[in-house]
Amino acid sequence: MREALKKKKITLWGCGGDRMAAAGVEIHYTANELATIGFWEAAKNYRRLTKIINTLVEKAVQNGTKEAWLIDFPGFNLLLAKKLKAKGIAATLIVSPTVWAWKYNRVFKIRERFERVLCLYDFEPAIYKKIGVEAHYIGHPLTAETQAFKKEIATKGNPIKKLSSLKEIFRTKKKIIAVMPGSRKSEVDHHTQRLLDGVRKFQKTHTGFAFIIPAANERIYKMLQGYTLPPDTYLIEQNARYVLNEAMAALACSGTVTLECALFGVPHVILYRSSLMSYTIFKRIIRIPYIGMVNVLAGKFIVPEYLQYRFTAKNIATELKKLVDDKAYREAQKQELKKIAHRLTAYESAKRAAEILLKN
Image (tube, rainbow, N blue to C red; front, side, top):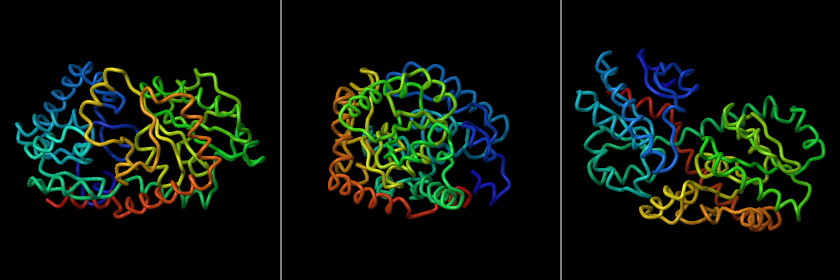
């Protein structure tokens, strides 16, 4: 959105978080108001989300909106695009849903409701072009953000090294392991206790490691404060990047953070757990054997995944032991992650997206 505003004076309004607001978008509904996790949870919120969609369409008509740029959140945005098109408002879908993993038939709804699709991954445009949908590969925004972050750290140093709670860790040069339970309330609820139990089990046989939990935001930080942490485990308010820049390994909730692990070259374990209802539905419809994006891009398991009933303290501890004890195993994963990181850096995605969005 920042790049679009640099190129053209336009009015941007809609939904988003603090960063979207800071970029110049007038926020009518926050990201937290829209957030759900899993199929069952989304179904329970259907009426509330439909009401938001109807309000957005009414506002779009009232203020003369000509075009909609709908980002991710496919269940919500597919319905929103249909209602906008009925009012004569064209829509672009930014971030393809995972049609290559489940619900492939969504491509036909996308063809019907959207003018074009902007894709984060290099293999996705071919899926759409095959059925006559305009699609563009723009690259992943994390790459530019990570590159800028690394330059900043190289110049100014890492601020977490100055935190009073972590000074002793860096002074004694303990090996750091990042623990990332997720950025949503439901993820924290499903993941945190099992992650901490896994850390405790690992600590029974291994010493000299520090576990750092970077809270995704203030709300998540307050939630995580309610947990009793194992020894040598620290909760901080800083972004995950600050920890990944120093970490030798990570325990990561499946999601965008696994791509960050790849961009920082941090070997990790992918973990995920949802409600039983959501998991049952998920298992019935998924078309590929993995959920971690690094594995999807590689077309094979380069990072182990422990999902649902396999997400146990024993499995966490066992896999973590392999990552820290087996140098060959750790290096093999790092080399595979390096290949993924190289693929993700094809474009400066924000500029590429702005060019396409404003070309008409």
